[in-house]
Length: 172
Image 1 (cartoon, rainbow, N blue to C red):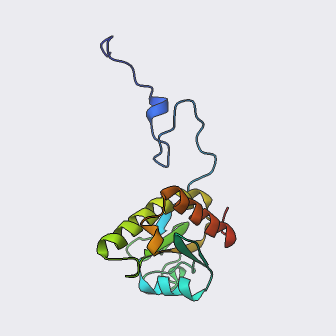
Image 2: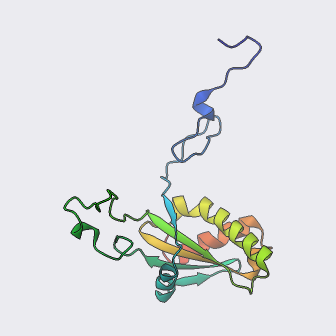
Image 3: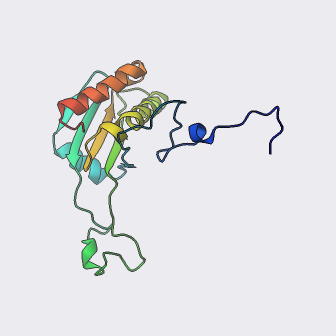
């Protein structure tokens, strides 16, 4: 038992929820489920999304969208053809994709390495805030930084991403 002069901690308020978010005292948990967000890392995925030509430009960013491809293993084979249970010999699940994936890119038009990295960090923060709860699932998103991304106020970047999602018809 703690000494009487040490305040008790309310575990119900300070414990993070399943998404890792700590709720404010007296607030309800978020009714909108947060999607698992994966990353696009391979050039072929970026080219596939760009080839779809579904994009929206805003002052702070450009958003490109494409539906996710069917699940395949890294060698491009159908995962169900490997094993009747859908697993490869090492026991993996056959290449299941996250609910949505996102990739980031900035060109040298944005600035030097420091500015490009800052722009990508700001875009990652905006995406982590908006996409898990507001983006349509089953799609891949590419967020492209612009010169204004570095200096644009954060709340306007959030508004830019929400506007782009809405115009592309990708909001839940």
